[in-house]
Length: 243
Image (cartoon, rainbow, N blue to C red):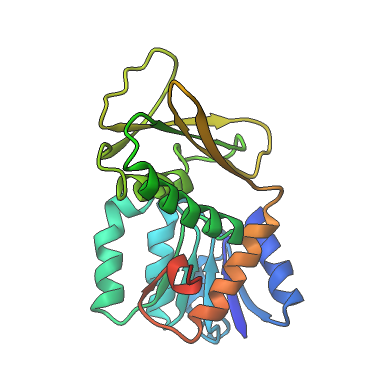
């Protein structure tokens, strides 16, 4: 398969290694200093573009890739609040294709399914209070992480007593009964740790996903690209993995 890369930081380089290792060809690499390369035959020859950039650049990158007739797989977060509706329309009405998830790790996909299932069970046990924490490297721009938000939305969709998440920004912050608090920690070069805890007076139940490296994200992104090459529309992990 012919793949273009949009963004050539640590994730872009890791995706390149994994893709080549799986027998794919990288036909174009676009970064901040060669944006004109979107409009080239090399980029247009790609079956899929894999995009890992910044929140402020992601949506523009989707538009540029779509303009050249190239499907997009993206792990960029932080853009959906402003552009989510436009992307959905483009994919459902405009014939464009985007595979998006906040986290491409296969382990996170499994963790997310467990998280939703556990929340469904805990809906019947009101004595348990739920909270979440996420830890990432100091270079991460958004807080809470996109993965934490996705996990929180999965809980809220199943837990009647919660209808919104809030960022717990320090000790003493008041959290209302209907709110799910998320604590965000930024330290070192941590790839990503997400923990969901249900606590009662009697005991606690905790599930955690701890990423050991970025390689798991890169493998998932290439698997998503392989899937996207033969599918259309607005796609996500639940389309790729049928749990």
